[in-house]
Image 1 (cartoon, rainbow, N blue to C red):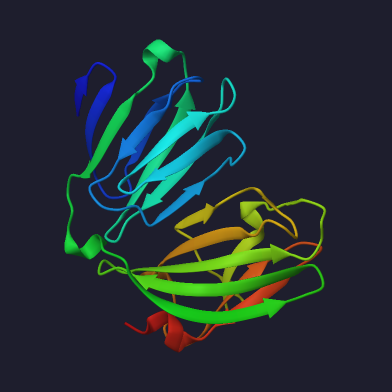
Image 2 (cartoon, rainbow, N blue to C red):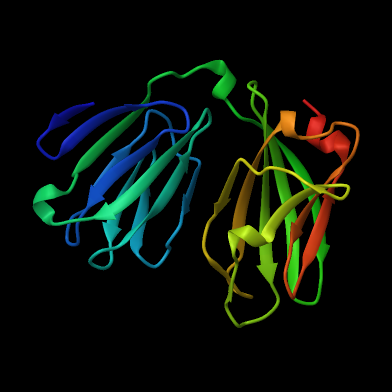
Length: 223
């Protein structure tokens, strides 16, 4: 990692977490080697984010704000921790690049549409991704039919095969809350070694207003 005053060049490994220091009144730029295809931020009300093709600008909206940020490109995902400090300690420009970019880390996505609905919630499956090192990613939306904001606890999301719960390696939520105007994007990462290939899987949101959706085995294991 090289430092030039408030400018950094950082090489990151796959799934490595990078800390970026921001400050109120300062616009911080994160530059990636490829065009950014998606952004998921933990606290939507704490930071303002704008796209600049291969970069984004980040401006904290309050002192002490901190959250996590995921930036996806065609070939990989960058994991970022955003913290807010004083202006002298903030980063102005952060260049992120892949240290060990290997073919096995590339996610191959394919569209998979399926939905389920209850009186309170609906789930819309969007796509399923695979990596050559054996991970399966399920990208879906959770929607609410009610105007009241509902907080979604990550621990209420389960992946089941039959009566057995399966390990979720990573779980990304675009926000903590969902209502009738704001859907929640969720990406669930699974290790195929933890799954049984002969039976389908079910995503469940457990609680008072529970909902579930089944993923056929063919959809999970299709390459």
